[in-house]
Image 1 (cartoon, rainbow, N blue to C red):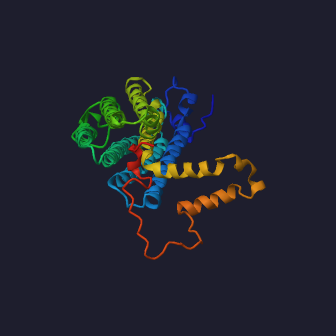
Image 2: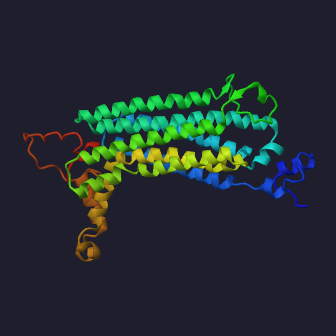
Image 3: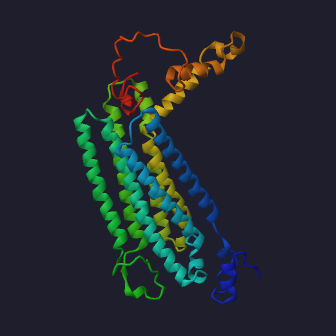
Length: 371
């Protein structure tokens, strides 16, 4: 007889709680580590994007945070909380085979995982809502002179609120009387509650989420379509404003995992991938809606690399004494990154330079300008 590698499985077998027709290998099987690695990776990637967004806003655009930036940071904070609970749920065994939950997991741990899942998905829903509102706030600021688009964005915001509230109510009031538990039929006290099926609630919520993503990422399509720019320029803007296609794909994947998680016999086996996909969905939404806000930073990097590697003399910088180091120093002086030691030759009575219009320093408004 095979010896269980999981101490909890070995303890359950020794206590006689595991039926003879359930194999130890089946109970030992786990996908916990890949799921945790994926969660940590996407959460870290979202953190990097948020840091770059803040850096771009403070040091390049030189304007204090807008409401879209604040909402993006709030969304990431909810994401961190959801990611932490996801890892706790995985460690408790929520993503193991259904037989593991029935025969190995103690009843108090089952109740604990149900409550943590309840809290986690309230955080998940709120994180996505905050992030989508951040995207709408950015689009609203971007379309400061287009009244029609501003009205459209306000309508989209109302729709988001109308979709968010039912999602939250479905989770909170999934059972009557209200409870954080989601009791299985075999749990003691399950008959005390009248509950909606887990898969039904999350399938409806996933459908709402997918529709919200379609609404959010349709707006930049309409904005780009309305611009009187060349096809090349529209394509360039599309690369900045339309990474939401990936988010929509992830939303569809989540809807699929929820469906198989409810209606397959081994319903808990898809829970680890589901948590990984949900974390990826939040991270991808944060990233997709932050990419346009990174335009000043990306433009600065592009100008640096263009200046460094442009021209034939770059390949023979040592011959003329003007290699990459010289170009970087020159670019830094010209761009204001490093103050020049040369004093200004302009007379004291010179006419001051006319202030730049909003967006001329590489801010968000320059996204929609022809180049």
